[in-house]
Length: 352
Image (cartoon, rainbow, N blue to C red; front, side, top):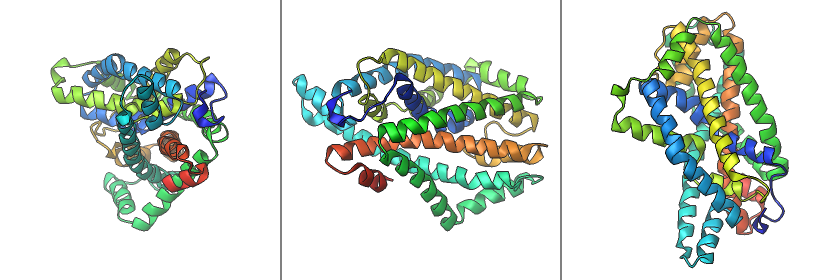
């Protein structure tokens, strides 16, 4: 671990791996991957996505890990320091600064969706979707969007959870959180997949995801798949540079990079097998776009015998995944502020 973080660091290889997987397994895997697969024709998109992960995203992820550990500071500090040591210009730090701005913008998006998930957990648990028609479920979602006071409340709760955790530091905050959140995420995900496997849509889901129709591959699909790879694995925004700055030399970065991508891909496929069997079993539209999570799936929950329990578990899963990624995005901002002698608690609460 580098000196730039004043004793802050992951206590184990496991903690670092869970943190990187947690950052990667966010809404990109649970929410965006299924609806983008649905919108872009299934198997053909998955094929291009996997190629993009192997050929483009993995080298970028490994490079960010190397930069972070070598620099030992925030995205800005690491890029500036490495450039200076090798005779380059400190203007490289601007790339890190841009990544922090991008992370802030993405966090503003994640936190809104995170607030929606908090709003939907009690709705699902109370059986608000049970027996409802598609129009009624849509009206529930539109009613949430039309109520600014509720949106602000749930957004505030989500950001309070995020900022409060980050303010505790790496060991007591981030590492402790991911060691709870990630096992919880896998348990809920596997439970949802097991439930979905009992429906009649499992075969259709597998065929939809893994039978590519190469005639559907277009330049736009290729760009969408590459973009999803960057978004899902959290590369290109300085998060992995920041996380790697807290590692020691004993950690094999190549192994962690492989495990991060493999873990994220595994969860993405689990998300597909949890969602698409229900979509096909209840004759819903797999190309439901962003509304797949908050409109299309609740229609399925409304028709299930165990829809109340399954729906609540699903939205808890969404919250866990959103929170794990939001923690990394806020740490990206806070690490830069701490280097400028801002107190971590003040930086976390101010950034949140």
